[in-house]
Length: 462
Image (cartoon, rainbow, N blue to C red; front, side, top):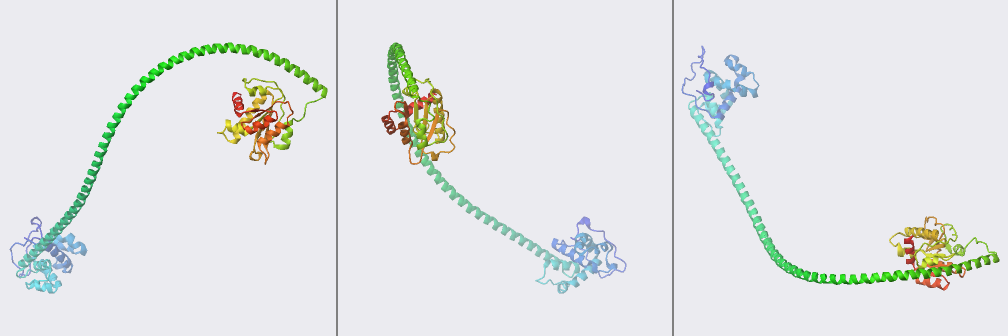
């Protein structure tokens, strides 16, 4: 049976049709086993030549297959074609004759039993199977051997190529391994070097630790010694504190006695002073009536302000009011004098007391504090600053406080001296400035100079 079909797929043998060619081969030997390439080539050649057969020469099962498209005929009808080639020798002879004729010289050579050396062994085997010349089995066997040899050669070539690829990969892996080994050796050298450094640092740390422990022990011993000394010093201090407390109690007792004596003496002085002031007041009232002096519209400082200073706003004159709620300081005593005039060197005071503020905040704080003093004492107060051209938007001064700024080309010190010279002799004029030159100048004109700290303490108390 033919190798074109599996044993289960072979059709039953058909009776030779009546009038068939009796010259058909009568070889009943089994069909040779065809290589797969030869079997596919036979099916393809038969499928291509199938439409060229007349309808009466075409087997009935293949008539439907002959109507298929050329590219589908061998794929869909190959099974039926192979069955008819095996079962119908007449059909095989007819289709083979057409295929051999279409093959030209190669078909003629195969029909004569010769296989050209340059011919494709698969094509020779397919034509030999269809034409069945003498020795066709040998041609098919030779084709099978050639196909198998070619397959073996291809397999060997594939194996050689695979082996070469494996060798190349192995060489690449060896190169990578060598690189990695070099890296590992470098890393090992670096780790060894770092280990040496760590060991050296560990030895240094151990040495430093021993030294630190020794120093700690010495410090502990010294601390214990110092604790003993501190304990003895504490006992001595406590004893001295007890003695001082005893002396303080004695001093407080003596101070209480002296305070009472001072109070009694102050009462006597107050009585004498009241009598003197009463006499002076009556004398001043009589002198005012005799001279017919009325209250002045402008004070001396106002004339100086009009001629030698710039005023941000019209000041209000204060009226004298006796008020003394301050502590027993010289500034409070001076401000308690009747019709006293307090003149303040503005920036000299603010820069000592409020230096961390801006100039605007310094002026505002000083003027506000002076307003409180004016309200308490009823005294005339004038505060003088340098440079009116650098001041903008100054708020109105409080009642009883005159705010002046020196004009361009003059200083606040010169303006203060002018204010002092303008006052009549005998009027109490107090100038607050820590500038020694200012203090010496106003003292020569009969004013009382006071330091800026006295006013700052007075403001803080207010």
